[in-house]
Length: 65
Image (cartoon, rainbow, N blue to C red; front, side):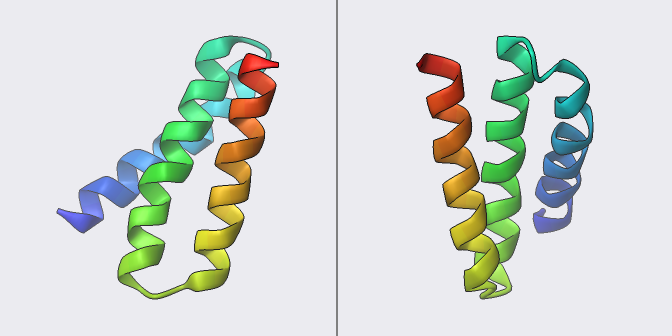
């Protein structure tokens, strides 16, 4: 199951840059980072968890500000 979550997160992150000027691109980036954070948490990669969290906050800011 973790592998599926990671792959879906990867696909979201791969598609997001092509649509980043629209809300859907930012939402894909947020979803992708959130899903990849699940994988980072399982592997105890705290630096990636921090980077992903900061990225999620940044995309939320770009989406709503």
